[in-house]
Length: 286
Image (cartoon, rainbow, N blue to C red; front, side, top):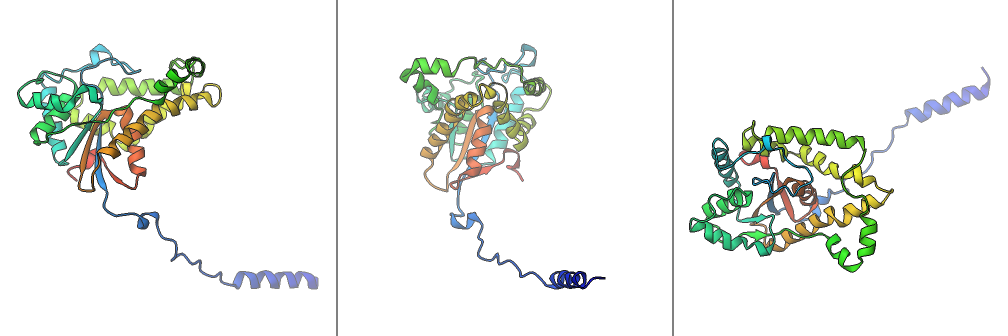
């Protein structure tokens, strides 16, 4: 063997025998150590609309609709109400504008009115507020920036939103339609509380928000992304801002009842915020 080869082997063996110095990590603190440990707890209950107003993109077939005023769903609504009570909310926020006059409706409910309203705001939010002796309901819904944009520049608005109609040939739309149909079809078959736990799971919320990231989101490279940002995502950011504004301190326990499409994004925002602790809906009794 040539001398140079022996020298090379010697160098390699020496290199392998040397122990690497331990990496100092004691100074690397987790981000959470820089923020207060106490946070305002928020539980978001994403729902379908109990009265089926038909305003959402995905419609429920007539055969899959339920009547929350008729058994067995009537008793199942009561089970949902009793379950949510375990969270002990001090404030309840709903998908409504100030013009809906939620607190006035709460007072009317306390006087015996609105008992036959199917809307989840009555069946869940107002009923809960009444039975928990809360005197205020908070309306935190918001419009999105696209409604401002059309007033500022209708020509640009029309150009931007051209062909944004949820009609496209993206194959992922077929996957989502199958999932949505399956979910809607299960409502009459499954206990309402278990159904709400299912659609409020982390996985359901992640995939639900993903529905906005396919189809028309892919219009003209970035145009679909621009639409989503000033339409749907912007609206939910504004809703989140309204939630911040009704938060007074870390003793608040805020219940948010909204359409589940909103809950998907509110989860993301609440989990990222240093001010709030997101409470999973299916962990109230755990």
